[in-house]
Length: 452
Image 1 (tube, rainbow, N blue to C red):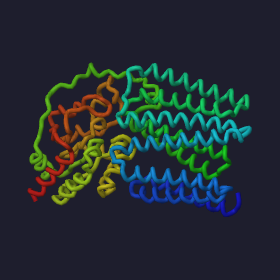
Image 2 (image 1 turned 120 degrees about the vertical axis):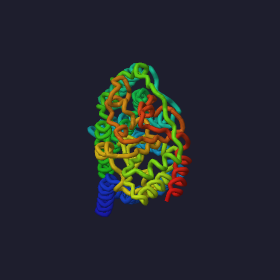
Image 3 (image 1 turned 180 degrees about the horizontal axis):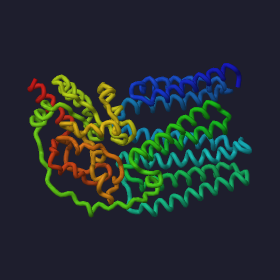
């Protein structure tokens, strides 16, 4: 590697490190995203400098053009509600790409590099298979199954078979294309089988874990190819994915063993929800909010589905104009992936100072006059604290039931992604504003404007 190439790779690596650092805060996330994009452009340009022949240039440029077009189309066209599944799919493509590159370099690798190629094919394919199933589950094209334990056992056996195949191939120095394809297919199948039984409430943890596996596979590919930048980038992704997995597990009060192996038994029938719901009209909600001193808005996946973030911003602006203190209570796994609500509200230019994480906001609910819950079902479910048989049991939730009054915006009494009833809706202090969240919030805006 010559000096200009080394310098450019160092600049790109620095952009990656700083970009990941900036992504750690909502205030600097956009700058971090741009910096990461600049780093990738420099990395691709530098790599093109060492491509030996024009024929290879044409192939690389064609692949880059196709990938850029697909990524741009996705960023522009995919709705915020589909962002989690898009992230899962892109993560799977990253793992699959790392596995394919390692398979291509396997015949040329020897010694430790050969073993790393095998490891990359296993990790990348495992991430690919798991991410595809995660995408299908988030898209709700497939659902969980009652054969969860059996699928997990079969998945582990298939994974063990893939590892055994890799070990025997490494010992025998067998680098045939058929062996590489078999190794990747079997490992991808094991990833799919292990992900399929995992419940929707645990999907944010799964996505983070698979993201970490993709990063590790990319780093291992860097060792196979002798590319330092790929090692740095893959290590960054692997480390950040691993840390995020730990944080998500802690936020949901679940160990990785609980998420992956599914040791909790879901028993829903023994916890029937009793009581009746109390509907409310938009004008009554407007009066309730207008004369409150402190209001907390709790956004969830329903807000993303309705694409009502701008209407939420209008409601909060009007309330602040009346002297009402307005905060947003953000659960770490609200929506379908970490940071989903932060990104959604950032689109509406909601002030970052108003976004309070669960650990910070939970102590404030006792002094809150009204909580406005917009589509957040599972993360506000008090059964997580009391019902040992619930699939949500043990997951920390937002203590909205401790507020003076609760108003829930929902289309119907349908259950959340975890598939369980929410006793909050039958609480004496809870009122239900039924309808599309965008329409209901627009009505609130008109009613609040009428009270000015």
